[in-house]
Image (cartoon, rainbow, N blue to C red):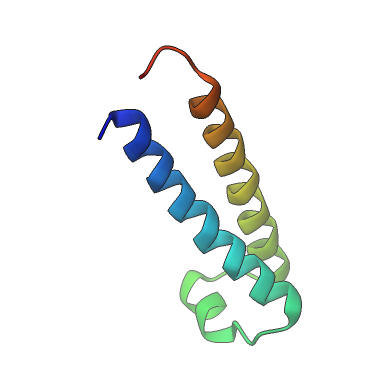
Length: 70
């Protein structure tokens, strides 16, 4: 297993995890205890989750399209 595949699997896991949290938050799932734990408002959490999702997608794209790592 190459480093490229390992990095893509880790980023895929991060992407899926934060996407699930973002969708649950938008759908109205009660995230009160999680928000209290990280001390963020609902709006801040949704913005942060959206940022992480977009960043993970961009990193996945950059790694998948690069020719430097096999």
